[in-house]
Image 1 (cartoon, rainbow, N blue to C red):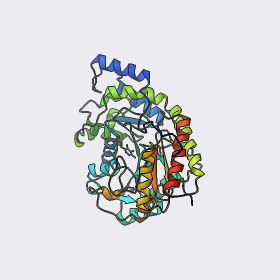
Image 2 (tube, rainbow, N blue to C red; image 1 turned 60 degrees about the vertical axis):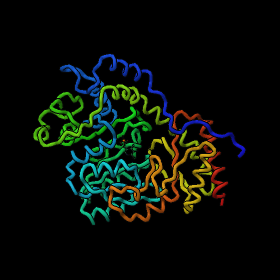
Image 3 (cartoon, rainbow, N blue to C red; image 1 turned 45 degrees about the horizontal axis):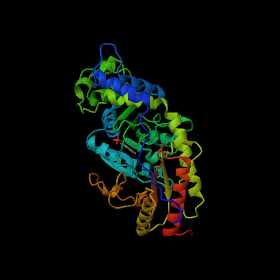
Image 4 (tube, protein in one colour; image 1 turned 60 degrees about the horizontal axis):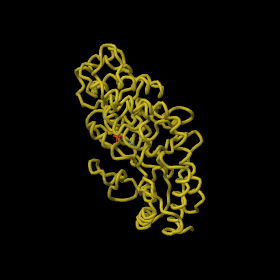
Length: 400
Ligand SMILES: *Cc1c(COP(=O)(O)O)cnc(C)c1O
């Protein structure tokens, strides 16, 4: 190996902006950490985050929650998913997504993934018809957006309501329209390595008054829902006040204080992520064995991670590539592994979901690799990572 070993961490996020540190200290000094610890008419950090996020996202209402997973569970329940009901969702996603369906008492029906890493709409339609499912929890996994216009048309015709999982598409757009504005509701995560980070956290947006009223009660608002600046009017609560359980999934002022200054710089982050992504992608695209998923013209994605495919790679080759990269200091994941590794797990290892045959997804995942591109990487870091990757593919798989 002629290249210098890569030594930077693939998981290191940037520091919290100074304004966030200051705001967090102010919360700590006030002693008022709980979101409902505000005076009459006062706007706390959690309320301010909800107001600012709703405005930024272009949604009528926003609710800050304890995690993205809780946002999805709350969204499903608040939308009206009934126990035992079928909920369509992506076969290729993180385990938190089918888990949220299960937590809402429903039954995940997994939909195939295309070679370009988006939901397979023909399989979606076939499974919607076969199961009578009324819901789709659509995961824009790793930031790959399907043709959203076509999806909305298909689901509309099938009577399937869409809830978006935007954990990887905060800041992304399809045809100029923000991801998270296409369905009944959308969920975002502010966990460690996401586009906004408070360690743990989530956000739920919707334009639907009743849904947001139920979500607010579900999040654990006790009878303090009037202290939600970005929530629906009092009249919308009605029977939800007594009918919905309390899942204790609130966000606190401290995390909200950390997030607000990050929201102000998210467009800048998106541009910086995409510069890193495109630099590595351009270099990889020159390798004859590497395939990059198609990114259609209407898609404006956020390149916080990069996916590449080695179609037809054997499992031992995939394992050897991950090991060869690790030896070079380059951390990549393979989605085809049968045992869960870190944040990647294939549908076959979700034992809490009834086993389902997904041959097309399995074929794609067998050759699918993933790499994070943190903002702490410089342009030179990206070039070195790309060069290592190309060399490792040559060593393990070859060029032909
Ligand atoms: C992180 C993530 C989630 C869940 O977010 P948490 O805040 O960790 O619960 C959901 N979907 C995808 C695709 C994610 O990456």
